[in-house]
Structures are given as C-alpha cells and as structure tokens.
Length: 229
Image 1 (spheres, rainbow, N blue to C red):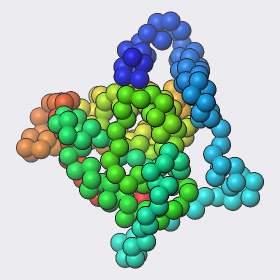
Image 2: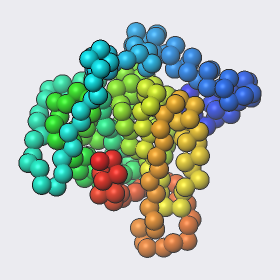
Image 3: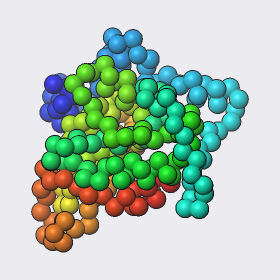
C-alpha cells in the first residue's frame, strides 16, 4: 500500500504528524526499518567505493564520451547484479499508458555517453527496468541507483530507498506539469534531487495545455543525454 500510493500516504502522515519535519522523520524511519528488516544496509551508509574515495581523499572519476570518442563499451557480468552507482531508465514497457515509447533509444544513448561499463562510480543499467511486486528486490535495487529516469507514476515512489543526494528525473506528458508537485515534495522529504522533463507540445502538435496523464511519451533523447552529460 505504501509503495503504491505515495500521495495518499503523504496525506495520512501529515494528518498524524502535522509538520513537514515530523513527516520527514517518519518517512525516513519507515524506509530504514524496511531496509533493516531485509538485512540491507542503511541508505545513509557509504558504499564501499565512497569509503575508498574518502580514505584516499580523492574524487570519483566518471569518463564521459563525446561524439568523436571511440566506443569503449564493455560487457560485464556484474551489470546484472544489484551493485554500483546506476543510471536507470524506469519504464512499464508494453503497458500502453504512462510509458516511454522510445525507452530503448534512451538507454542506448546513455550507454554511448557513459561507455565504460566497468566504472564503479557511475554506470548505465543496460536495459529498461521496472520495479515489480517483490519489495525486497525493489529496495535492494533502488538503494543502488544514482539517477532514476521515469514517467510520473507509483513506480517512482520506490525512490524512498534511494540514497540522499540521488536524482529523481521525472518525465511528464504534455500539459501535466502540475503532476510533478507530488514527487517534487517526495524528493524534498528524502533529500533527493528532483528534475523534470515535459513535452513542449502534444504528439499531434497541439498546444492546448490539456493534461492526459495516461498517455505514453516519446522523449527527445538528445535533450536528456546532453543534460545528463
């Protein structure tokens, strides 16, 4: 219930606890309790890579590929495990509503921009991803995400398990800017960064600013990739 209905839960907690700070503490305590029950590390705990960087007093290095650099993409079996600092494209492929139509194109664009798939600091999950009903797997995966890109919907509420400072990049259909209020506040509660991408016009070229929240969205991949780079 909690994971699927963040806005309703937010209203319930507000009625119970009143202030924003109390709501934040309640949310954080709840998410930490779930992680603890699953024997997963706290999202406030440094990763092994972060601990190593801190000990060596150095900054992380993330190689970014410009248009003329050679392809260096590597296949690494560890890419299929729940480890690392992942850029993840969340998509309900095949559902036909609130779906990224060209999600594979976006994944490929990001893989070209971040070609070194063995880099432990920032890597692209090599295919579309979707959270399923297994809470343990959702919590385990979300904790490993640095940047989550996905269409507005209940799946984004799994960011409750993402580490502070991680980025939620919300995609909304044309005319649906107001929907971002929910997850913008959600990100604020969990100390996440929030970004928003919206179509400048509807697929049929109309500019009537009418929101069809169930519609699927085709991204301008260059807009997303260039902004991330």
